[in-house]
Figure 1 (cartoon, helix red, strand yellow):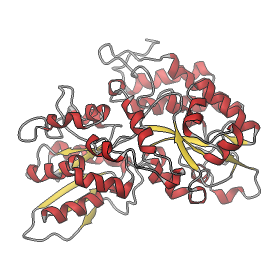
Figure 2 (cartoon, helix red, strand yellow):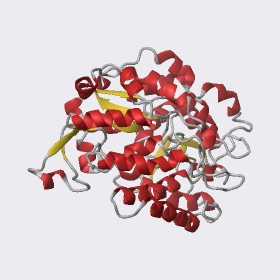
Figure 3 (cartoon, helix red, strand yellow):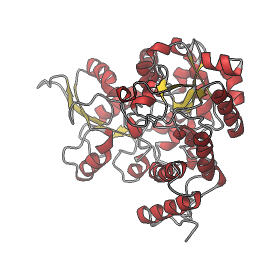
Figure 4 (cartoon, one colour):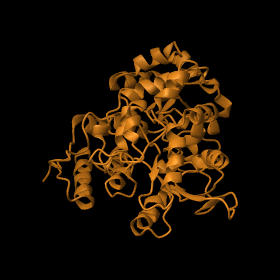
Amino acid sequence: MKYLKNGFKLASIASLSLLLGACGEDKPDLTIMSFTDELQRPIDKFEELHDVNVELQIIPNESYRETLQPILESGEGAPDVFTGEIVFMQQWLDANYWEDLSSDPYNVDEWSDDYVDYVWDLGKDSDGNVRAVSWQVTPGGIYYRRSIAEEVLGTDDPKEVGDMMSTMEGLMDVGAKMSEAGYALFPDEGSISKFTSAFGANEEPWFDEETMELNMNEQRLSYFDYAKELRDNQYSALAPAWSPAWYQSFDGPIPYNLGWDELEDAEGESTIEVFGVALPTWALDAVFKQEASENAGDWAVTNGPTSYFEGGTWLGVYEGSENKDLAFEFVKMMTHDEEFLTEWVDETGDVLSYSPVTDKVKEDISDDFLGGQNHYEFFLDEADTIDASTVTPYDQQLNDLFGTQVGLYVDGEITKEEGIQAFYDEVNNSFPEIITPDN
């Protein structure tokens, strides 16, 4: 699972669709639709194993749902296999776009003990039938610079650093020490949201699905206060997530408060170095190893105040496919083939949800980029703490609406009370079925 700005997947997309391989007249054809190019290598393997042609159609993440949903509804040009992600997936599960994999001849319920609980549960519809399966877990943590930790905190050990940041108060204490030493704790205030309202981080779902009442608890409201504390005390570098400065912050000093401007626009400006950032598993390969070559080996990952997860790719068989047997073979290879998934770990470092493989490899994995750290064990432990029952179909939209108001408050454009009321107004307009506390 790989992202671009605002959660878009990190994929090189030159056009709406990408054809992999020439179609032969005597070979079966399979069509797969996705928002990411990460399936290319598995498709190559599948074509080799099954002597088939596979057409991979990539739809940009920002238009994926709007483009694919009418196709799934009508069946015109529909794929045999398609992917979904947590932002919109729950609404698709109950729409019966994916085949029921709990039924004959698939019977994937027999697989349930092989997967991390939250990943398996998020692929079920409201009746408990499995519609989609994912091969990966995507819990998050705080990636940090070892050299800065050693200088400021007296240790670079992930366990010791994690203990210091295991509460919000402790995290802010580390921020104060970083600031005193001339460093920024995070690139931007958004990193703190991962521990207040991100997927799996909050102890309560955004709303009660029986009463439809919004849960505006203290943990969520604290996002206003902690984000303001970061800004007022200059614990952040004011480099918005996915901006040029945000990426550059992983590879060295950046101009302070550059915002969305290009780096070359800030020549001569004062610079600051960033200690860490809160990101999930996939960021190691998709962000850090791409953007932080100068600091390779100087990184580690550890916990923050709460566990959370971000993103993930689920896939299943289209319910109207005429190639369901072959389509399921691809799903099975991608999610349940021990030989393939072992190779996948070796090639990508992806953190799997499939226990028969992770149980074999987790003790021996080390990553040179992370100074030899076994990040697998850390992320698998984090994944075990995630509760899928707190996830609702509207989490991403609610998080975005809420984050906008927090940003306006931190910028000094509104008061906290005005931000809360504006958020309620936005929820009432966008989701009238949700009852806000002011109603």
